[in-house]
Image 1 (cartoon, one colour):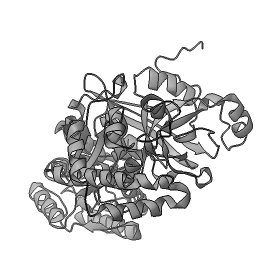
Image 2 (cartoon, rainbow, N blue to C red):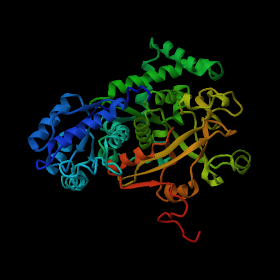
Image 3 (cartoon, rainbow, N blue to C red):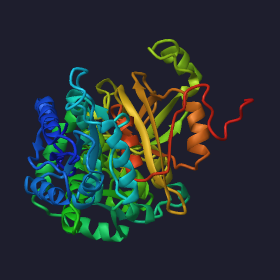
Image 4 (cartoon, rainbow, N blue to C red):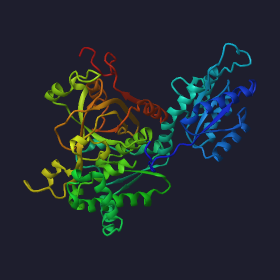
Length: 502
């Protein structure tokens, strides 16, 4: 995992619980076995207080808090006491996963039988009764090795939960004209504990100008030049302007965190931005994303939120792309059809694109990535047939082949949250196009496009994690209370509005 300062470090603890009519040593022995099995997978603080009653619960919670834990595994080593075990989630200020012990041997089914399989039912009932949130794995009962694996899968989810609780989305400007799809009713942010600070583009411009002679600019320019290399540094004269902007955003984040620990941005990047600032902000946006500070284009608040979630869950840099254009038949026939382990149809493929916000490390070296100019904005904003001036600053190249998860958390106009998740890959196929762009392939994408993205009125932006993290995202969205979590359903499984006769 990359060392991002803008996402939390998960510090795990484990608390064992025991029903007072069961043998307490059974839970304690099984708890120790889990800690041993987790071993070199990471750090897991073992609370020595085993919870049989409410006083034990208070003591155990205080113990893990003093140890610096910010996420908990609550382990039913036997049936477990349903009131105090669920109160752990109430008194501990962080995500809790509830798991239970499997029985160990047919040779010890009297004093060695814990009945935790039964106890998990009462646990889930009591969590709901108290309106408490708990993460319960798909099959939450297992051996020490099984539960060690569950804990591994819990960590990225816990990281996102902790991060969202301390996140502020900082915006600059309203969405561009005719970009109603970037609708951002902010009630949904507060529903999941995220703060938002909305500012004018003029606020950003004033802050940028105040950094004009910042002594740190040259060191940022040097770092940019090193990253881009000789081939990618097409406009060296632009780097000081972009370095000045990078410092402006970083200083703003630090000065405006307030009560929060983590920050993402959603900025208006056109049409006024390039002319007034003197460059396109895309390359700077890409650099911040590579440091775990996503900057969403076009004031896409939920795009920025989704990118941050992807960074927490994957532990890697992410990007935000338009679900942009279909793949031409001739490219499909020559470069895709029958050439991959999954036999993709033409409408399983599409091109994901944005002007140039994808981190440099995610671009294919053979596409000669580098800082270029925004072709569409150049047509719109600069004199016809002129050399690009202030429309320079995009980071362009084909996006490198990779596993991907395409996803989004979005608020409907009424403020309620919905989401989608689709796993697939970026193909090693040349796009023959401009911008930061790649050929994406997702099984049954055509149907997903029609019956999720269109039918449920999603915007054109989707977040991209460069690995398969659908399982963690699904768990997280469930935990957040998202009622509608859509995915790319396999052939033969119809969507609710899909025509069965089509």
